[in-house]
Picture 1 (cartoon, rainbow, N blue to C red):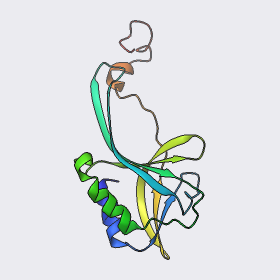
Picture 2: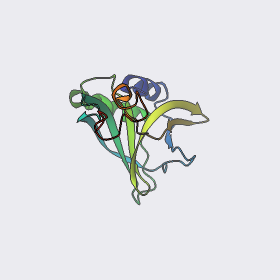
Picture 3: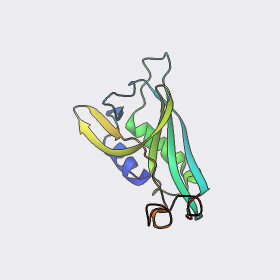
Picture 4: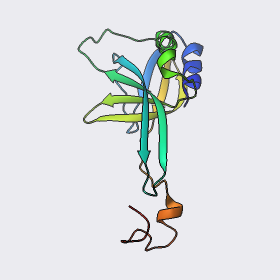
Length: 149
């Protein structure tokens, strides 16, 4: 989900209870703080030798002892607006960084208003070969000398 889509959901339900549903069906505690809003830029070389870049908006959550703390969707939308200068694009995908041993990053896949809550569904990340045309054209492509790292 892009920042623009994420903020549209936040603005549509500004006073709802903000929730994040983890991939295992659990929920990030209702009193979690969003302690950071950042842009993450990653530049890397894939196994086929192509230089690639990926960019995302990362929202870090932190669970404290302050169980009365609540962050409303409207306030989170305002925080994202203030971060516009560092995010530089509303088209970046949004990910939630949450610590529930270990620290993990979860892409936001969808949002649903249910009851008085706005629930964002989080999904897991997966690895992939980005150079399948180089690495996997034949079964032995990744053997020594086959063109794959």
